[in-house]
Image (cartoon, rainbow, N blue to C red):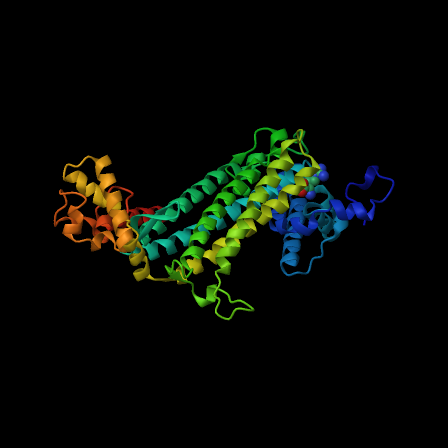
Length: 457
Ligand code: ARG
């Protein structure tokens, strides 16, 4: 097939080169945006008198037919037409004849590809935000059921102070909330219309760029043609936001993996979201969580690939930039797939409240509260810390928890300790007392659940 740019060439492209530099195998996913962008461009060309209204109509109708054929699986892409832009243009010319050759007036594939990727990413950002919203909704529902489910909070993965499962889940709601903000913010910079930048230096034709922007739902037009065709910051930004989402998911998955072990025993995964071993009949593995944790590396890689691809490029467009798409598509696919798999994984897991409570009680997570109790009895905190440390050492020796010491035993450590120590170190009460804004007390947590729900709406 003759090349759309074949005029100055005397030889055919080597087949190896065709295959090597063609992007149609992956950029075909942009077809809808490419066609919508071309239709808007054609209408604009007619509006400013560069082509006639009947010509524009023929082009727009031809594009509509192509869209239908592609959606119905009737269209065949060709490697020698290189990319989605020239595939669509070639199909158009085959269908509508000479008038199809007018479509590319005052346009380059350089501004066209920037347009397509921006339109694509805009939709995928919205889809990703939706998935994050759904996940947050699920976490809030779960949190609502567990405002009183006491569990140990950890530092250094050592039992530290008591929290509730609701509080723990809400920590992730905060992370996903920031992820949504980042995506929405990134979208503002994505949603700027580059057509009119041409190959790099704009065009001599009197284009109505604002018309095209309005037609395609953009907030504005790019303000420098060199930048418009060589900017991929927006794709980097998306990948960075996606990398953070994956990091958050991965940490959550790590906890789910730990919690589902016999050693922790905090949850049991639903059969539908876990898998068995081909050799060991007793196994129930948290593969979904592990796979999400594993896939975070891919998305970090996509981010690194984009940054590295761009770092040495002189202005404006360079073919290196064709490499933006596979990394971006992979980041989009991976983060969305992981969000889709993760939500039912947490929604269906069975929480073992008793084990969580036992771990909180047996782990001296109320030691700080005992020290705080002594402070209330006028013991200086540093001294209280020392006293409780010795009491804990004693408990470890005796195989007891702090709640299990009798008053006499307590008195060996401090005469300030009285009968009222027991309610003061009651685990549920230790949680209730942490009623500071953002703390784990059920009342504070319920407030956060409500405010998070309001933000979702
Ligand atoms: N397939 C190309 C890409 O994805 C489109 C732009 C090509 N422009 C060019 N001057 N070769 O970047």
